[in-house]
Amino acid sequence: MFTQLLTLPPIPLNAAKERLKFSPALEKVVMKALSKEPSSRYPDVMGFTKAFEDAASNPDTPAKPEAQATEESGLFAKMRGILRRP
Image (cartoon, rainbow, N blue to C red; front, top):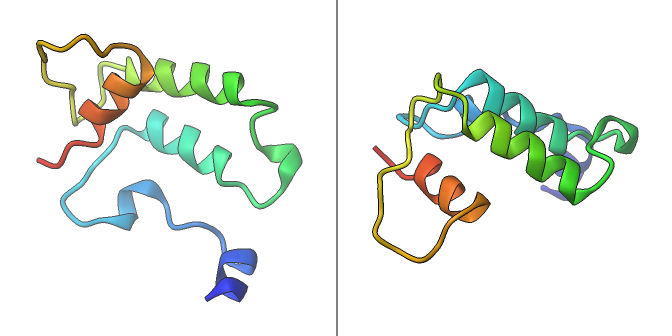
């Protein structure tokens, strides 16, 4: 299993779980973050965060966050809404 993790490319986000679909922009961000080649990844967590927020804000995102009456906001609230199962 560890050999596969180190040698095989990651499974594309939209192929990882049946019935869960994400925007191409979000999938692109995640796949870049999972790149085996360090120079192909984001330079730091803030670069990834910015790219993820931009992709999450994309109106083409199929799994839209639901409005919630909580104090939580920002990236984690967006991720929770985007990754919510249909």
